[in-house]
Image (cartoon, rainbow, N blue to C red; front, side, top):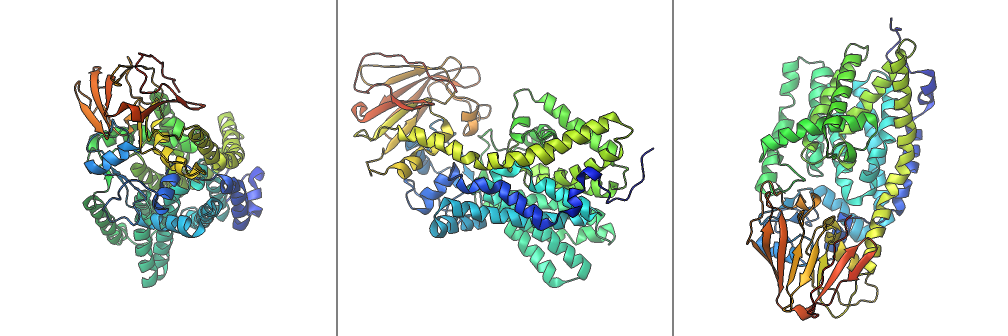
Length: 582
């Protein structure tokens, strides 16, 4: 028979939580995350630098974002040509591909970064301050649902020391998730204050904070799950009245969604990375049925969501996530913390739904892991109560403690420093890029995302102020085995029996939706790319590239060590070179 203990009971081995104060936890979390200060710029940070330093070689998009920082690609053919000319958009992108996000408050924070702060370590300090504020707000939010102060503090520790948050903290351009979650929790706490005191000022703050959250990042939509859970399990009013009081928030979200669509923001259906729920509801529901169990597996097993949600064979992870959810339901539904658990389960499930629009990634789970951390704290307590009579409970308890309170915190310094290592690899390869009289460059086998950031890296590293290339065209996706030949007139023929594009390359063109046809022709200034052959699924297996002025082009081959000159275009001997796989 299970021992009856008060809801705030914690096992002796977790008594350190009893003596810990929130400020101690904040200091510990920020120390573990401090390597982010040395992690520099990575990925989209480089594009933000280009835009705000006015080095972007592409015309701006006319939308109602502030600085186009998250308006990556629109469907304007002229602008797409400009992007393709420097490989900021791959030549194989779907003609109507677009990728636009409306995050004006996040843009404003980056304006402060690049115009006022200027130093990367100060930009990272900016993000760390947001994370510290978020931890404090998470603790107060947990106390709304968990009856025990100590258990709420344990939930806060699990959240604050979660290694899955490392990249969100240290990737400057991902600050929108920190801001959206922070403003969303202020909305929830202000609404709670309004319900307890009937303060109109608190209600006004709650409404404005919801607007601020939505204008920071799309993840803010998930606060609806927490507000609904509050209405069902915390608000003392009859449920109908509690629901009616949430209607203004629903109206705000609907209004924001309408403005979002009217402004042309969102993603096209021709991408495998994002699935727009309103545009492709069936595809979204199918993806959510796989991704929610994968997210659950990541939250409770400690395996990164980037792994659980992106395996080629998905059914084992789906089964694991489903079993974890079922185990939680069975073990906690009738516990003395059952009401708190039910509220947290509802909030977490609803919060996870918008995240399913893209493949699971740890950096997108900042709001989802709020509920996950709180449920995990309750789960640890319940497992401890069963340790004396159930061996599985004992093993599970210690496994979770080691995973989430030892290994996960220890991983934070490594993950927060990871952007430095990732960008250093790209910078080293960029340093091998030959800047010479050739203003036009063809690249074979380049990584599509690295190509997006190649030009900003070249500009930042161009200390000698040498002329930069006006054209950078990556012809073949990375990870493909290909051969290429050159005809006497300078044209290139590139063949890949298994296809020229990898799955990652289909981020900008989903071949299931927009397959290539033999004879399709794509124009990039100075070059014509013709699809000579495709396979059964519309994957190009052979292309012919015709250059207007072959003598002005150089051909480079991408390798892990850097860029190598493959062969001068003016040389007319036929040559065949295998592509390097990654």
